[in-house]
Length: 312
Image (cartoon, rainbow, N blue to C red):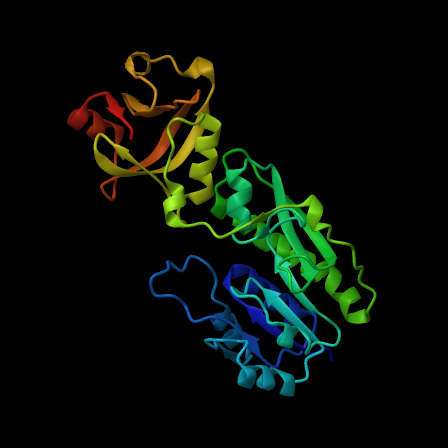
């Protein structure tokens, strides 16, 4: 029986762990993270899946600690897998897997190496992304590619919706190639990082809307950081606000009297419709808006501040 130590977190980690067990892989240890009490847990917990499967699990503060490396070494794994584990696996751990240490990354490598690949892909208006299983090296997301599975990004998909697709893509990708990987016949394709891209982590403050940009760019930002991520934020009529969902409007759809009176970087309200006029060109229908921490209706906003409200 093939033996593997698994480093995993998030829904991708949970689904890929199930795939390994479905193929009869012996998993003597699952390494995961303690949940952050300040983080909204909208994803599946690997620790709970490990409990359900009867697998031992641990959440070390530092997986590169020599004592922990020795613990993994004593388990004599043939493979090490990293499925959305949030830290780089050390070279000492990678060296413990004679048949390879592999990572599942949430993009079509070599594009979108690094952190938050789904969010970056949505932000840049990509129309496809996916999951890539690759060998781990000292440089992140740079090792040979074993398998990939693509998924579409539709024009109004949020990052959460795309992440759900990528989770399924990771499951399909691993399930399809695992028999060949175990048999030693899986491909190793070059990962030409010179042809790709690398991005760092995103911060909540990166979600501030720049209303001088065009409607498509703002729409992409809203989609990329929509809940459960921190959201795209702005100031509306002097109040803090988050734009939670938008839709691009064709030029012919932007013809109400309120829109005609509104200038760039403002919100026009016409009945139950909210339209943002973007400084860089184009308009957006605001489908969900939060003001001062509460969902705001067009009627309530119009009654309080009128039909045209300035953004800042």
